[in-house]
Structure formats: structure tokens, C-alpha cells
Length: 150
Ligand SMILES: [Cu+2]
Image (cartoon, rainbow, N blue to C red; front, side, top):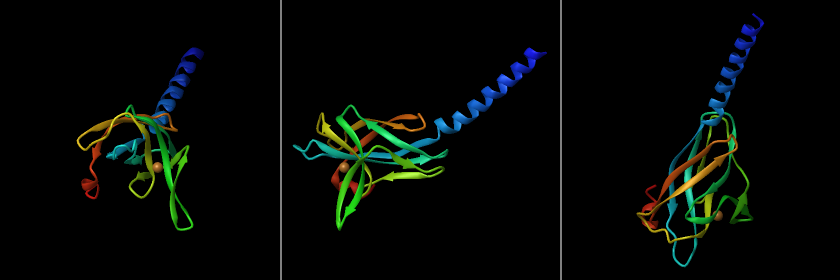
């Protein structure tokens, strides 16, 4: 009898646990990822995407791609009337909210490209979130000409 109660109690805990982590772990989806073509010999470019969150508040905490040595999260700040970009360690994503990385705003800076990124090419991007979610996706390289249509 005691054992039976213990078993039920454990089961409830497990079910509760699964319910929670389900909401936490798979709450983030990434859409419309794309990368700006680089102009050789520039070995840097930016990636853009939209993050949607259907769970508790979280944050983008790192990014990487085999196509570049480093991928940094950058935000735009204004210094007087000069726009500057600044590396941050985490980009907050509100509960049931979204974060958009777009030209003129926040972006992923791809530094030390291992190859030139021409339109038609694509690269893998891996994003890690504070809730433990890791998402890998493919982002197409977009020409300057086609950027405005994104
Ligand atoms: Cu930047």
C-alpha cells in the first residue's frame, strides 16, 4: 500500500516534470533566417531571423555556423546620432513574445568567414537558448538586390 502511494506520487511528479519542460524546451521557433552576401575581401557579414516564443521568457545566448569562425549577437545602439553595433551575451525573448533580427537592427555578426557567401549558397546556423533549446537551421544567402524584398 505504501509502495503503491509512493508509485503514484512519483508518477505525478514525472508527469508534472514532463509538462513543464515541454513548455520550456520546445517553446521557441525560428523563422525567415537569411544571410547577407559578403563582398570579398570582406570576411564578415550578418544573419537575420525572427524568433517566436510560445513559452516562458528566455534568451538567445549563442550562435554558431561552420561557415564562420565566430558568430556574435549584436544590438544596435545610438551614440549621439551615430548608430553603433555592440556585442551582447544574451538577447532576451519575452514570454509568449518574439525577437526580430533585421537590417538596421539586431543581428548575428558572422566574423571570419571560411568561404565567400554568394547568392544561392546557404549555411547552417545553430542557435542556443537559455531554456536549453538548441535549434539548427539552414539560412539562404541573399543578394543585396533581393534584400529589400525580404
Ligand atoms: Cu554587427
